[in-house]
Length: 192
Image (cartoon, rainbow, N blue to C red; front, side):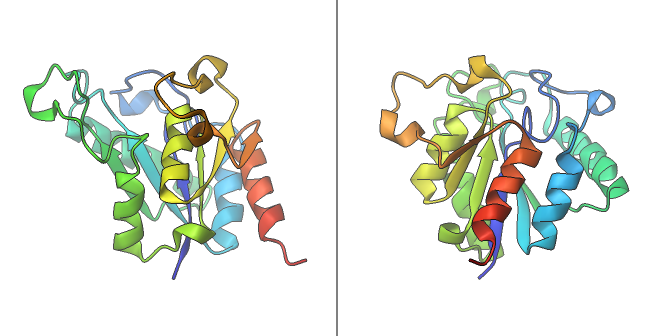
């Protein structure tokens, strides 16, 4: 079975511009390409799992999200990095766009996207990690049995939702950025 590093998109892999809809606005965060290259070289599949409620809010379309994915892919190719797979949740319980209004299993903090990727790609969740900058990333990681790393880049977004059990929001580790998170994973993965 494969091992994976699951990645949140906004604020982890690229700048968080809140409800991004324009591919030209995409900026890969400093050190992200080098971090992903190291993880891929160590044998990890790289899998993006991202809530994209901009679709449910009517700010972006699924085609916009696909165009953003293509832009990120092109930028990472420059650094010789390839994302294995991309998974999105477009739902939101208070969506303005009727077809996307739902309480679903895929929207983090629920682990549906992680489970779907594990099934599709034969991933061993016990040997995998998730890197994200929000409490919902860490809760999803813990619910799926994946080691979650919280990036502290956006303190306001790392506050824990009062409705989540506090033990579910405890990260395996905390990192400054994606590169630091990759270093922590590789240190854990190193032979003793």
